[in-house]
Length: 172
Image 1: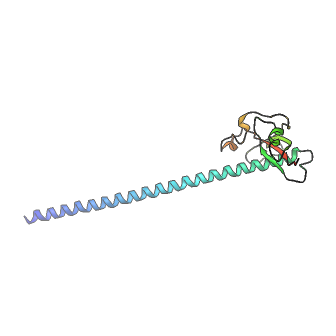
Image 2 (image 1 turned 90 degrees about the vertical axis):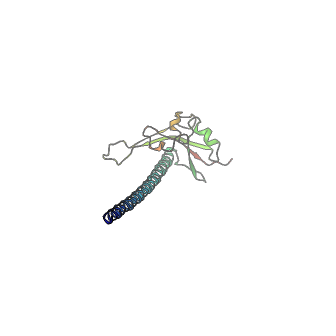
Image 3 (image 1 turned 30 degrees about the vertical axis):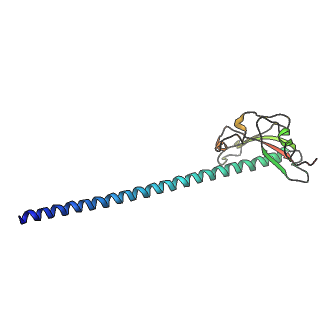
């Protein structure tokens, strides 16, 4: 009888020990999984933030390039007593009509620009293109060339050359 009681005590102790070890293992596994999920969410958030920063820098770079293209496309380089403006060009309007609806009512140019990615490796490499459609026509009417209508990642599309209206402030 004493041997039976000892055997039962040993079995119960082993069962409890396994249950405690199993519980500790399960808790540890859940903790690790939560930690991995938290880290994964943090990484996804950081990657999303990084993509947004890349978009912002790309659009900024395109806007600065458009400003330089507009400056170079005008006969006098832009003039008058006020600053000049570069507006995203609506694909269905002429520059003259679009600028005419703003305080920058004098159109100087309707430019489309395109640049290549990466660093140039030779002095004969074409790193960009530009075109001046003038002020009287809508220019390229393809909606893909309209920055406002483009999606957020449109700046990364290698086949798109957005248009910009170059305008001067004019007070009547």
